[in-house]
Length: 397
Image (cartoon, rainbow, N blue to C red; front, side, top):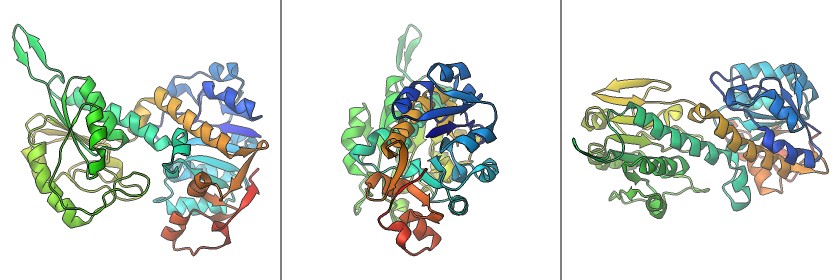
């Protein structure tokens, strides 16, 4: 079976789906790897490095799609809706596509993949269970984004993060407040702490207090009467408008005393909740910085402009896009490990074996046999449950 890797076509995307170091593990499973020439250049990986590890370099994207039984991508059609449509004519029935595809929001693109007859898996839908931890690409990319958010904040803040004792006097440490204690938030808190800042963090899930404290941050507790705040898989549950209104009132005082605010709160497949109002921005110190990691989902701050850095009320508000791609070497390294581990999980007797009895496949398989089969996506499309979502076990290649 042939596994194909192409250059990413999404504007500004610098990651690559696999790196040379994972190729031997694929070869051991009798998988041949072909790589489009230049696929890894943006991540700092030359064609020769792939060849040394046993991959074949192919000159021409069309030839990779024509020959490959399985295409591994960072962004497949759903998360690359413009340039990705050009790939539709290259796809063939029974071909397997694995990558980020945003199936919960890119419904039209998902139907196009089904119509093309491809078997597609979405890395975003990986269940948060022990046996899938090494395949959890969302957590890997959140780690990169959390780290880079602090670097961005430090670059724009007109202060230094650590405390210094100098002959000219004491330089006080910057104060950083992280909203959301998921993977990105915890990494942001840990990175800010390593840079010497005084770090606080908040999450609607009280159970993460110990995790926040384990990275050296103080957990901010707000007196909010809530129901269960944690959804399946460890994500924060979407709350009602009254909860967020009361939360904003209590958060205003906190953000007004910090130099940096990093917002990371997001609910998969839904618009990000507004946690920071313009009035709250006004209350922040002059020269302070807000990095909104939820910018691509609408933003946690109502003033955020996706993909833009603005100054409002003397506060710099950064709405980064595709932040993981700004650290392409290590982001690719982590993603490559996730996606190859997942691919090897699917392989049986040298082919991809589709089985809805497998919990990992049941969660991540989006299209198969000309139909959309993922239950959540089917619900969003208004499709009824049918045989496509029942027990199935087929050879996909």
